[in-house]
Amino acid sequence: MSKLNCWEYKKCGREPGGAIVAEFGVCPSATEIRVDGVNCGKNGGRTCWMVAGTLCGGEVQGIYAHKFNNCMKCDFYKSVICEEERAFQSGKVVLDKLHDE
Image (cartoon, rainbow, N blue to C red; front, side, top):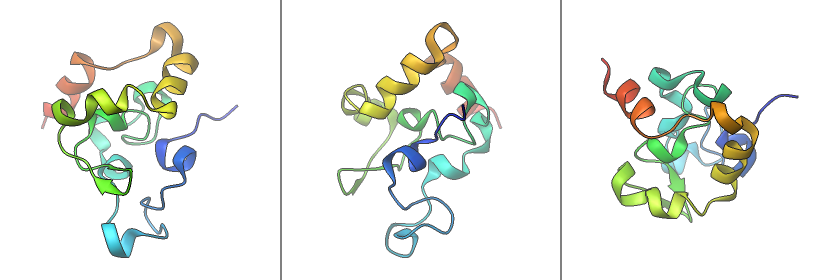
């Protein structure tokens, strides 16, 4: 079974070629290559809670520290934790990848 990325799960329309790209731009999760493959996702598609500038509740979100409390309540975040079980990667591992140049 293929694991969904956030833009597929949420049907947000901010993936490349998506319905609202003209208004909000392509989501940084869809283009964040430094975390490609983490939690079996494409680019940042399964680490969106760690990527600044994602769209939730109709608003562009800020940095990880400002948005994470809301993300922890998200049904997609919870589904990734369940699907990945002990292989789930978040926190320092992902932040280190995001800070690698």
